[in-house]
Amino acid sequence: MAEAYLAAPAITAELGGIRLAPHQVDAASRLLALLGEWGGAVLADATGLGKTFVAIAVARVMGPALVIAPAALRNMWKESLTRAGRSGAEPPDDERQQEDRVKTQTASAEVR
Figure 1 (cartoon, helix red, strand yellow):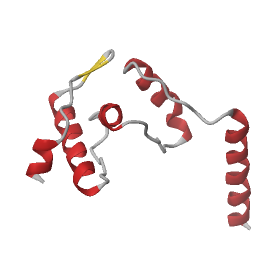
Figure 2 (figure 1 turned 180 degrees about the vertical axis):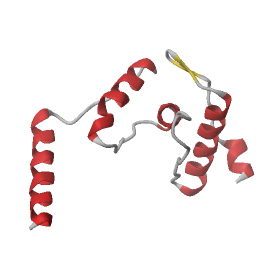
Figure 3 (figure 1 turned 60 degrees about the vertical axis):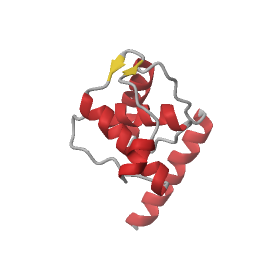
Figure 4 (figure 1 turned 120 degrees about the vertical axis):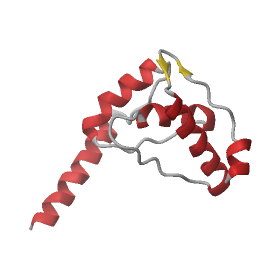
């Protein structure tokens, strides 16, 4: 792991209008090392430590990413990406409506 950590691409503290704290830079570096060595990683910090910004920093290095989050966090992600100087593509409204219908049908089936 130490070799992967040292070989991981450098993370800069500046993300557009956001400046990562030292613990966030370290977390992003560790995630990049894990991704490079194992092909995956989990970021499970406590609330308020800046997981969103760490994820954006990692995605900036790794390339496009898929964010799976509760619908209630959609605007938070959009605002964070904007602050970081990035944009996030969303599914078109017709796809989102289709997803909502499937969720509703699934929930209805489970309640019966």
